[in-house]
Amino acid sequence: MQKRNVILDTDISNEVDDQFALAYLIKSLDNINLQAITIAPFKKSGYAPVETLAEGTDLSFNTAGKILDLLNVSKYKEILYKGAISYFFESKELNPATTKIIELAKANNHITIVAIGAITNVALALYHAPEIADKVDIIWLGGNSFLSSKNNEFNFRQDVKAVRIVFNSKAKLVVIPCRNVASHLSTTIYELEHYLAPQGEIGQYLCEAFRNCKLAYRKTTEDIIGENKTLWDLSAIAYLLNKDWFNTTEVSCPKILDDTSYKNTKFKHKITFVNDLNRHEIYKDFFIKMGYKIK
Image 1 (cartoon, one colour):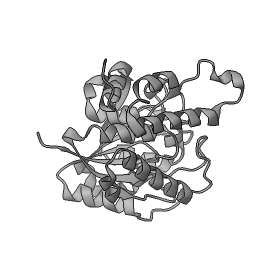
Image 2 (cartoon, rainbow, N blue to C red):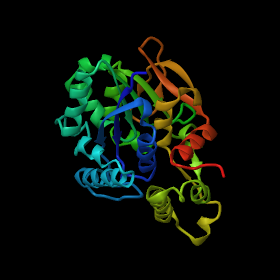
Image 3 (cartoon, rainbow, N blue to C red):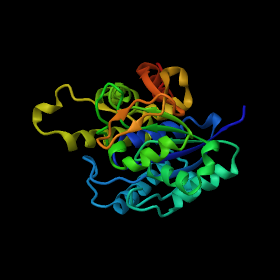
Image 4 (tube, helix red, strand yellow):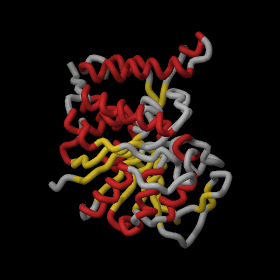
């Protein structure tokens, strides 16, 4: 079987879920040719309150390298590329990540971009090289489901102009909404301590990152009761690996209004929205690949 060419575009220091997602992807490379890991912009998240996009990019670049070291695949640090330090609506300047996306899209018959942050780098690539739209397909975690009135979601709201560019590009696009879809991927430290913590340095590191992330959001001592967290970005990796774990629908590409809400259309090109996912199958696959074995 020919391996699938893949680019991961991630704001990996924005939240802990990207770090889990990168580990999941690296543990799933049997049928995947990972050609680049590109760094998406972010700033002022609740977990890593960096003040500028440049700071966020540098932090993410270093975090990605650390995860690769912990997974004993330091060779993949050679395919790490820093991305935009301005949002699309602020600047159309090329950057190393965008340049590499364009280069790989032109060099391959087909390539999949798994985007789990603001979609600025992908939008810039399509803006500067619109001809690559026929050669890429994009899996993006962003926005919310149609059950939500607006897309006031971190990946979406950071760079709405970039979202419009990608939606209107006619590249093959799968959107995994956060609220009401990826939000099913909630877990607890107790589940992670059982399945993940015993799996060496990477397991211990991810559990500790999870604990620290929850500390950052905890307001009172009582908040620890029933505490859980969604590892949103696992959904995009899982979709890349097995579409059977997802329920999807094709729709005419919606218009994105100024308040970030979707307006339905009838006669535009089709894009795919995920409606639901199988949490059990995704977490089972993740924990087994990370090394868990039934005793």
